Image (cartoon, rainbow, N blue to C red; front, side, top):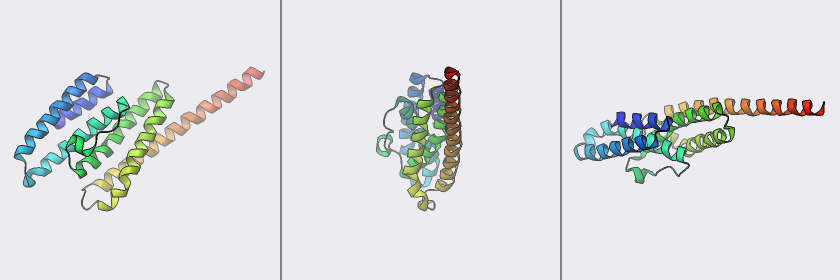
Length: 173
């Protein structure tokens, strides 16, 4: 199931949306099947799979500019939902770099804002790190990723402003 989710994320990054959707549905079906066998004592083996599922569905929603599916829509636990969304921040970072590379700065800035929205929505849960294992660490990683992208977006904006200023001087001469 984790492999299906990983493959769907790779497919999304390569623009193979139908393949990604198919792998995501396959993973969701597997999760439903696994839940029949995994009760309280085996849940820890399902939580990672749920995180991957959340990450894949959230990334697809971001790429399609649709609302991120809710915890209920995906039928996952709260901890898996939160940590899966934080994992998605790293995938969005890749999208930002792709947009910057292709000259689509406005889309990159919107994606950056989405990264911040996800982080800001989850940050209040940091006090529950003892309940949601690894949440604080994933929050720290997401914060670093966001700051990296903030620097890139800022640098690109300043570079464009400089080029525009130089172009303006050339036109006056």
